[in-house]
Length: 392
Image (tube, rainbow, N blue to C red; front, side):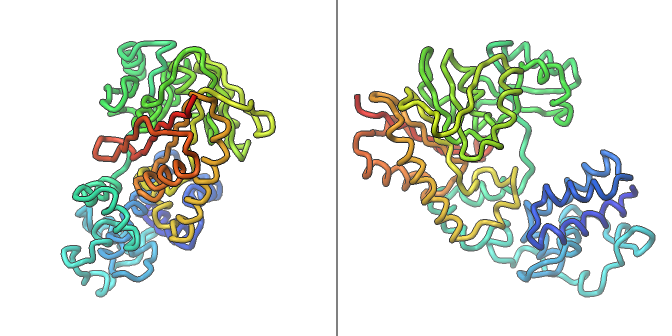
């Protein structure tokens, strides 16, 4: 595909996504219907779409939409204008190219006079929540959420040291360096797309996991011989990290068992054992229960930018109710003297500190041992973790 054909495809896809279709699903359907597109074409179009979603409001503004609902064309015009691209070379109207710019599309205001939410690419109703949680750091964090996330790896210490893992990756022309958030974390600086084909990955020496996610697991008191329940396991990233951290008996559970279908092959690759069980088969109590609850994902919107625009006040309220219910459900499963680890990938107090306050009021047998907020300013996704100890 030519560069202009890629641009036309991205505009078409953005129109589909802006109508409410999931971006991943739209990209998959497009690829199936356009099999002539090579892997480089698909990657370039995907980058267009996700970069546009991260900066949707500012790009729409620069594309002439103002604060109205934009079209895919307006968003891509804004994206290319922000990048300093000569628009006339791409919007030529020639074969496979978008139509030339109109006079209105050429005459657009700068971002300097735009509202804060436009400049920060954030829904207006969420700005006070970021301010309350982050104070003077709010705009710096919001700016980072506009950038593409890095690829992080967790080194499996059961199979290699950090240095050995780095050397193995280098053998596949992948450059990775340690990251300060976790002793096992690597950030990939070259060759990220090749990770899943590398020997280090296929042999279970490394696993893809955000450094912030690794850090919150590192905050949990995990010791040999413990029974551990990962109650909202999803794909099992935290279950794997727990199983690799110590000689523990790990059980993974998720309300949707289909989300856990990758856990068995991932565990086999890592050389650990993780059982996946329905709620009816769980043990009565565990030494450590981890509740990585459903949340807004506001700490990881650079990785999943469509979620930022899909979130509504009603959905946020629903999520907080789900979080409180999960905490109430798992509290009895924590053994006396055991630990409950509450985790979100959110930065909002309503999902973090406020949830802990409410939980303690309902369950006075628990006390807080530590809390930690990780923000994108630390170089990874944002997370919250609270370690709660149950009275013996």
